[in-house]
Image (cartoon, rainbow, N blue to C red; front, top):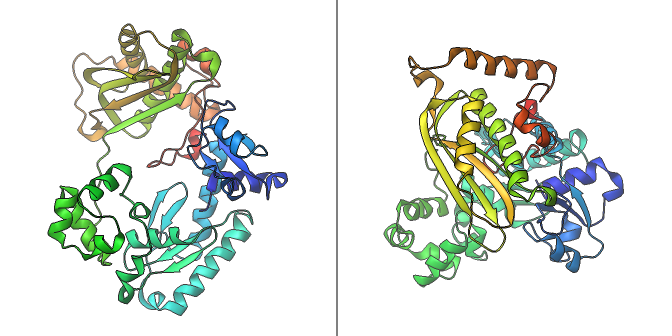
Length: 392
């Protein structure tokens, strides 16, 4: 999807259509744009641009505080629309999915007709403001590269017989997995162009990446399909940029307690137990502070809140900007071993609160420690996880 969050805002509010729009986490000059419409991108405003800089580049920019519940709702409509045309093989993120062509669908005229059908169905079922770019290639990695080659509303085909020459016009950073640090590493090995990258052997790329990622890249650039990796979940967490009025130790702690409650709820819903908690605090003008502690397997919100209070005693002085929490060393529910010291009454209390909130509405029952943060730390969509609609 093209400029997805901004396009959703334009679809919901027709008065925003055709105008420069930036979606922000909160209305403050110190935060950054998390999505920008193409009208705004024309002025040089990008994802990650500070609001103050965006105002300088585009004085007519309209800033909208993002409501991630709407983006999830539209995401589900889009998946349903694509599914009506072609089975969705994988949902990669909130604004990206992959489909596998089989049989006669691999014939170019048939594939082109499917692309046309998908775009028309999206307009009808999701909205005319929601544009997408589609790429077709011998493997999923190059299909993503192809989709990025023409934006907005583009369509690109990379055929096996055209590889790797069809890639030579791209920049190294156009390839997923090649970020700033990897690009610098490749430059250090005298690799500055895609043509040079593609001319090297698998062993050369292994040395360039200093890992098997280089070998994998050699195969992917030639259109080969690699086995999909099964990624084991390692942590569950939430973070939040604080509104100005909460950028004090007391205010930050209230928000962090809310984040701990949200993370503990996810832990139970996803049927994990945690053995470690880490918290972090970002300051303006100084290094972030991190602290952590280990414990026996737990899902208990009150226990985690108490652990947070102990860690918070070590907070250094500084101008607080953002906070976050992560629960790790996860154990699946099926592998959890109860102990003689488990507080079964409190476990039942916690699950009862979950059931009441699920039935009557989020936060109908909550801990008193999070009372002042009830409307803070709203739902956020991560790159690797799309929240369930029940979380909105």
